[in-house]
Image 1 (tube, rainbow, N blue to C red):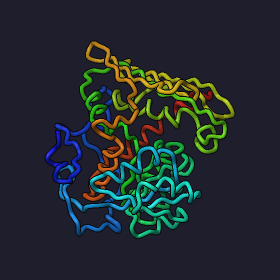
Image 2: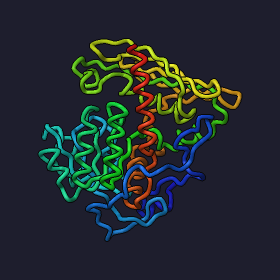
Image 3: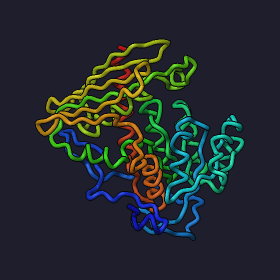
Image 4: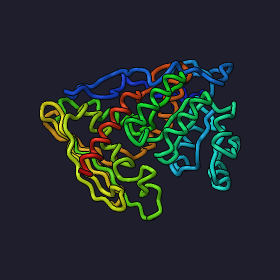
Amino acid sequence: MVDSSAARGERLLPEPRRPPCVGRTNRGHCRGGAPDGGGDGGGHGIDRTRRRTVAGRHIAEHLGWGVLGAADIARRAVLAAIAASGNGRLVAMASRSRERAREMLAPYPDARVIESYEALLADPEVDVVYNPLPNHLHKEWTLRAFQAGKHVLCEKPLAMNATEAEEMAAAAKASGKHLMEAFMYRFHPAMRAFVEQLRDPVHVEASFGFTVKDADDIRLQAPFGGGALLDVGCYTVSVSRWILGEPVEVLARARIEREVDMTITGLLTFNDSRTASIWASLEAPEGAQNLTVVADGGIHRRERPFSAYRDPHDPYQLMVESFGVSVLENKPVAIPLEESIANMRVLDRIADSARS
């Protein structure tokens, strides 16, 4: 069946019947709405002369997106999401490997390869920067992007720790630019519906693991923010907090190899004796994902909760378009920085507990 809006060439964002649940109170109730993720939005370098309808709103047609680095997640998902978005266009990629960047941009003939990160930030056609650099570079290049007048969609985890995340949030506010952590799983309508239908959740079990086979993989390098907790454990903590609120106690254990947590488990305790059990691993079978919630007097399960199901919705595209609407209309981002900072604080507590 062809949607009439699609026939008109428009890309519509889904309009939820109620504001999305961006978090939970300490009693597990849904919080709707969100404080601003940073600054006044600015609108730096945005061409507002062409307008179209996205999510029922009349907005400038396209934001120019620039990508820092030739990360695999950009190749697999985000480049296509930007190119397909109703309010964005892929302008350029900067990479140390021009050959790899050219290969990745081959399906997007209008996008350019730029010789350096600095040159991409100086490009007047770039309004928004997507930052999928290694974790230890998130803060540096996000702050540089703000200094260049760009908005930033930064890959998860937002930073190496909560202190860095707080500094990034302060810089966003000072610059008047938007910043959001790229937790794409929160944008899939099916995942949102799963969380929103839960009533009186009392226990969450969240797992995410796979195998990193290359010993030189950056995800296995401690100085660069490697390890299971930051790479995939951030998802398990995020969804547990989304459902249950903020934990009051954290206990964790990890298998450490070369200063990197290869597998980590944690027990989070919340108010009213509610709990969450998390597990993350870089040495697990592929597809080791699960979300189980005890709520409403029953058990609710969602397999592969953090995978990018693209039929009929692409969560990456929904994320890109949502961020674009926030920038163009100077509105709060869907995942506020307060939420990202709170997630980093719990990750810090888990890391400390696992190494104590």
